[in-house]
Structure formats: C-alpha cells, structure tokens
Length: 260
Image (cartoon, rainbow, N blue to C red; front, side, top):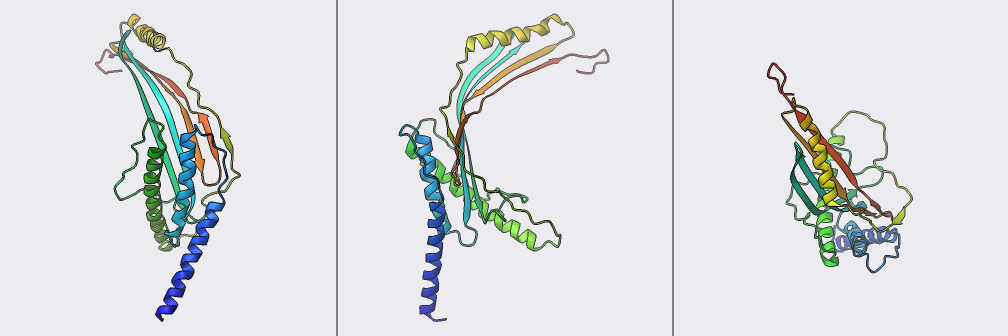
C-alpha cells in the first residue's frame, strides 16, 4: 500500500471519528443553567468535553456519560447507659462517574470485574467549596479513570464471550429513555443538635432499669443533603437524599456464661 493510500485512509478515519464525536455532542440537551448553579454548569461543560473522547477511542467509543454528586452533612450521636459518648458533625461530597463504551446493545457492563481499573487513581478529592475550576478538574479526572476502566472491561468481556461456547439470549445491555429535567433547590431541614443529643441520652437510659443488661449503646445518625445527577442523554435532576436511622443494642450474660 502506498504512502498516499495510507494518508487518504488515515484522513478518512479521522473525519469519520470527528463526525462521530460531533454527532454525539449534538445529541445533548441544552439546559438553561442559572449563574449560581456552579456544579450544574461544571457538569454540563464537562459532559460536552468528555464526548470528544469518541475521537480517540477507536472501536470502543463512549456512548453514555453520567455524573452524580451527593452533598451531605452528617450528625452522629452515640450514648451508652444514659451517658452521651460522642457527638460529631461532618460534611462530605460523594461523587459517582459512569462511562459506558460500545453501544446500547453491547457495552462494557454486566461482566466480572466490570468497572475495575488497574491503573493509578487521582480522582476522589472533591472540594467542599463551590469552585468551578476545581469541579471541572475532579470531573475530568474521574471521567478519565472511568473511561479507561470501561475500555479495559470491554476488552475482558469481549474476549470472554469470544472464548465461550455457551449460547444466551441476546438482550441489550442498556436502555435509552426520554431525558428528565427536574432541578430543585436542595433543602436541609434544621436539626437541633442539643435536642437530639438529649433524646438519644434518654433512649440509652431505658436499659438502666434492667439489671440483666451489662452494657448498651444507642446511636443516632442523620445524613442530610441533595443528590445531583446529569447524564449525556439530557437528564438533569436534583433531589433531597436524606437518611435517618437509630441503632440500639444491649448485651447480657446467660446463667451458663454465654454472652447475649
């Protein structure tokens, strides 16, 4: 094959991949994002940039991206036998990034070790400040890791299926749905720390009236905060994702010495 033919084929491939990336980008839904929605703007802009990975991905081009972030505050109160042991508050942001390569019919998911990445990770250090540049940086790092993990998973899955003689019903790996846009303001109900601390102490004191109880503990944990989700199909939602629970235990000893 002559050098001219190689150049022509390379040019045609580049044009095809660029067209593929342009088509992917054109499928995104335009959102009217308020100026104060820094996280949403960072997610939207990073989605647009991430779709350009189709240019360098070859046959295993990404077809779906998803960003999710839970922004929460926690209150944890521990008490034992009516005495408060610990009261703590914490703030954290828990991110989740998903990249699927291939197509809706056949992608990198649903196989052993799907999503496992063998390289080094540099994402996960989500800032607590609402800073656009830091958001974009973390989203870029998490997308890079998720994309590379998806490509590795796709290779393992394809090799496994090519070497398998088992026949199975061919079902799509994923389903495309109509996008949903529902962005509300995250609201954290005000919690009176002192009131809940006193209540937890009273609950723990209930065990004091039972002489068979040798030790006890009551733990109250509140997690409050919104979860924001945006994906390449055009879905953008935010919802309150609060959790509350109480954990109680009591320990005693049977006449034969067995701990209960």
